[in-house]
Length: 262
Image 1: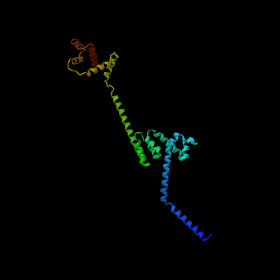
Image 2: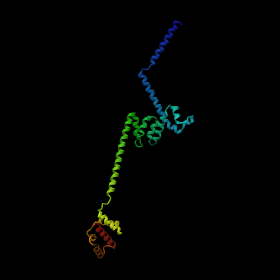
Image 3: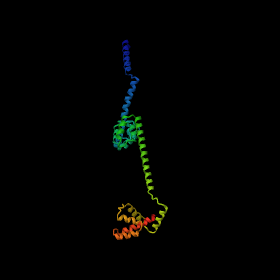
């Protein structure tokens, strides 16, 4: 080999070494590259998982010789059975919360975050939780969900206690509605009842009489003398022709009731 050939070969090797040295990344540059590729991979996995509910609905895997959505997801996206189950469960759970389902189908929010807010999201507050899942980090979102559950639990306990107190008050009122009669009065009423007297009718007539305002005229006079002598009442009513015979009988019954109560 000539001297010229050796020099040319040496120069080529030196250039290759310089070129290789210029492409070597520093640790910081290598880390940035890993972050970029990893982020791209995460986004791709999220987007792929978001396709699985529709893939399960269409059953497209059957057209390509695969027996299940799990085999389909493993072969095409390299995702686990657990990930597939989670995304399908969330898709079913978000049927009543369209905003959350849209976030799931778009792949913009991770499954971990969506699964975290699923326990507190409702049709009324779904937009709030979508925005929080998009803005907050996973730890911050978990704290917010935990605090929300604690507040809801406290409100539930207070509501339950209020209902218990209301029920207790009703029971007290019902207990206080019982008639408190003296034993001797109760005994006398039982005697009258056993004799065939209609106590309910007599009590109703007595209450009606008590509810009538005395005008001080002829009716008031009849009510006053009814406590003294029913016969006198009958004679007065007959002379004045202002009371019917039925009214006289009612006044007599009322008089008997007054006698019963002493």
